[in-house]
Image (cartoon, rainbow, N blue to C red):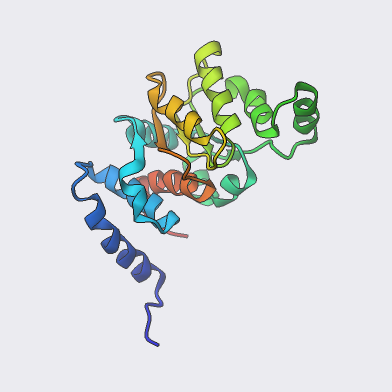
Length: 211
């Protein structure tokens, strides 16, 4: 069987297949890049009409990345997937506290999820940085509370938790806020690979050299 073997050729062909599904969505060139990588990560063109982002999301995300911002994640899968070498080249690093013993202990005391407590523990550190949530709706709800009640202002929130309990509602709440630039997906679809794809896409828009 003959098949494409070179990584960039595979990626380029994938983008060609995705392109027709984006052609009628009136996207900017930058949005096309981010949408394409999110769809590619999902292997699902049905994402095309349900991806949502504020008009300033990519611009503000890229601006923060170029200034050396950090990224705060809800789960290790998101932290692991982000291109940390690329991020470090801009001066940033990735943080995830979901596995920290003190976070687990406090979450048990408070009767909340560890991802939720992890976001709460970051607090003011989220200001001016990027939040990437790919698994836990409770983490996204907590970030929205911090924004609304405590005046926390991330540069951009990539909120794409997945699942049947709370995911759709948390993403709808994110899309309805006017307080922070955001990237999300409607409904129950999402997950860590999709959140990672959005983050990496913004970094590749800045510098597309691969390592």
